[in-house]
Length: 218
Image (cartoon, rainbow, N blue to C red):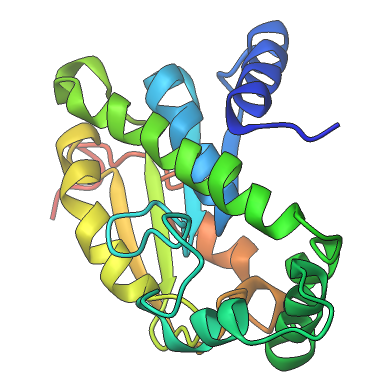
């Protein structure tokens, strides 16, 4: 059974409502960042924080629209549209794994799975987020947020994506509660490398204690 974006969202919402969101920091990279943002837009500042790394939020690229050569990102679009002797997406997914070393691609090696995820996860996820972002910012506030992106992402335009997403986050985060951080990485999955995410999180507005106006006065 393939689970769509709406079902995933409802499942996590149910869990958060049962456990209580007050001490929860939603963390996601890539598609996980899109899912985390959709949840944060619903739970708002009842959450402790939101951390996204290279979120595929669809401002710059929408690869689910069609699997064809016009996809705007070269490396991925070439692999998605290359001729396949078997004529299915399984071989394409294996090519993504071999060429780009994506952990997620190996999980999508079955025929039809990649196409399903592009449409039922990415497309539907972005439409959900876009619907939330159409609402006034005062009705869709966000908790303290960290947005990190790879400066030289070779798979997706994560830097452009982060810059396009930033204004919507600024409208919804309290003053000094948003950090946009550029990572010295060419990978779409920088957390699989030597990035110290724990340190980055500890130094972010999410875990930094608010300044005391008296004791911190200089």
